[in-house]
Image 1 (spheres, helix red, strand yellow):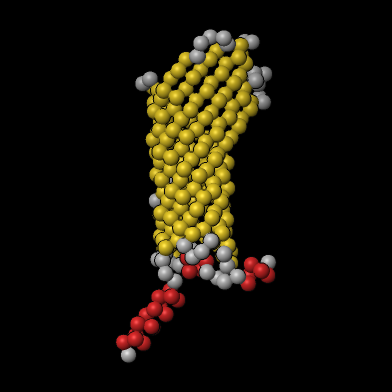
Image 2 (image 1 turned 180 degrees about the vertical axis):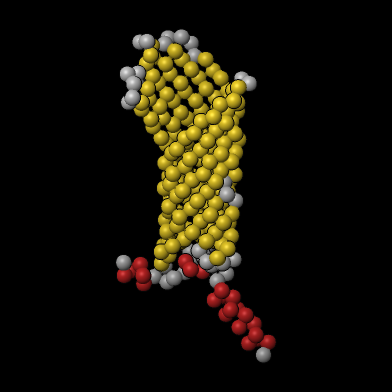
Length: 222
């Protein structure tokens, strides 16, 4: 603890009002479900991989807001037994989305900082489904979907230098889909744990540095 507190407080400059924040991360989200309320053996699960980017501005010290963009791919499955037949469902999907965010840094000390983030999401994608019942050949269906949702995350960043940080975060994502399939519309909801890791970028001069540069220019004029 004493070592951390003894490090130079460079992170304060990176998080000052007027500085800019850029992020580039990859994420993994997953969930599983098993129905214990009936005699039928129903199981399901899904896993999603995402590539995320964001650009924000610090509107006050340590608080950044801005737009984000993500590309998501997913795989899901479900299985149940009914009337001694096994039913299976598989689906792969993709989507692109806008992800506005608000991020606040706290406990910043030297080269380390923690942050909390709230984000929203709205996008479009497609899902490719395959159904099998017993030994019958599978049925394939493609549907379009409008996606929306949001998330909460807590993270940690290590500042390599004054402009670059390595960060990781763990959060909860809530997503809703409005599916259009063969002329009919259906809706579903899903919650997942999400783990993200990547880089963050900080642009902007410290107020202290700006004052020193201004002072130097004035001294040269004199």
